[in-house]
Picture 1 (tube, helix red, strand yellow):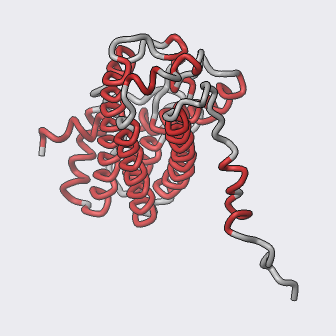
Picture 2: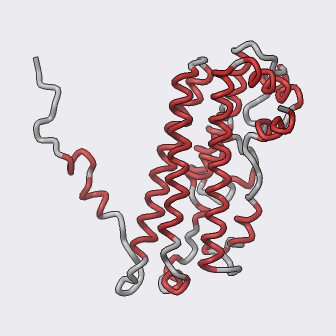
Picture 3: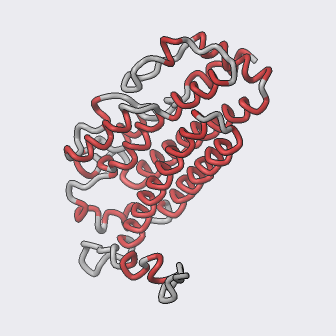
Amino acid sequence: MSDQYDSALTYTSYLQVNELLALQKPLSDGPEHDELLFIIIHQTYELWFKQLLHEFVAAGKALEAGNSHYALALLGRIRTIMKVCVTQVDILETMTPLQFNAFRDYLSSSSGFQSAQFRKVEATLGRRDNKMSGHLPPEMQAEIKTITDANSIWDSFLVYVSSRGFSIPDTVLDRSPAIAYESNQEVQDALLDLHRTDAEAAMVAERLLDIDEGIQEWRYRHVKMVERTIGAKMGTGGSSGVQYLASTLFNPVFKDLWEIRSRF
């Protein structure tokens, strides 16, 4: 029987550590001390976005299969990853405005607004609008369209809720996934019934609310970090900076789960 293990495999080769550590390429003269931190933080964000997408795909399948326990585990992991994303802002805030501005001009037209993976996360959560990816390269737009043409995590949750015997309108379940979901009174009634009569499904719903709260927390911390670093200046890449970021605040992803709070 052939040996299935590679005896030459090492920690360094398995994780491609040498290749990973070669990916940080500061552009500033010197280079400026804090540019390395800036690069590593944002590269790490991209890795976490990749993992979030990986987990959301599995969570959506678990929900549609009615697998509550696995869905709970995956959604819990997603929430924990979101906590890590928020904590990373603490590290970025150790960099003063003067330290950031020492290399900011080297960023040229690059901007976090151009993160295709974060747009994919938004699409997975249910965002459906033309502004989401129109500024990205065509191949990235195509990848995001593939996501928006499929069920969002909320759509998968509604399939799960329906499979538990709660009444979700056919107009909601049968609509095209490419059409943005809008808050629905009948769905809210079903969710109230679910919370009162199905403890296991209620735990899944609350885990989604945890994720929604985590997304909002990350957005808020991001806004304040940018504000304390560049104030009201335009963002890199010509974005409106804090003004745009602030417009994304207090917009919950799973609105029905928030709407029912006053009806318990």
